[in-house]
Length: 158
Image (cartoon, helix red, strand yellow):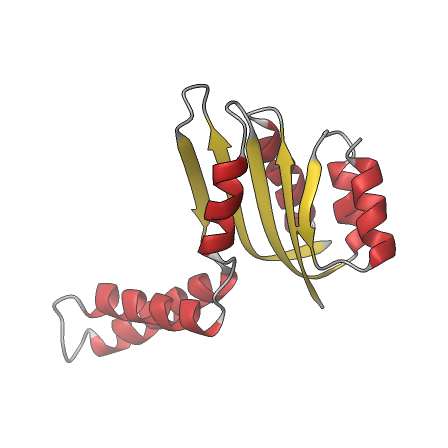
């Protein structure tokens, strides 16, 4: 089961710190992440987005690199790089990740000095995600969690 969560924060570094907490859960194997993005808006109103590769893109790039290395014997120039790029594009097409237009819409509404986190999870216990967000004050923008889980997330961000 996958879930999408978008949260905004008044503080510029809160989204990055929240993502680190979620990544810790991922490293422990307690939650899976398909795609993530962090948007920050500096005091001058300039937006910075760090959109990490979706796992579909990463897997596609890895498969492409392996295929490219096999083709290296026949077509030595650029086979590995070309294979990784093609595989990444295929992986991205199969698992498109977080909608860029939605990210842009949220970015535009961020206050200067604010930030946002976008998570597309796969598997894992939503309760762990909710608990990881407890140290941060934020506002849920959108989620595909069920009503009870969404309310628990909203409550944890107060």
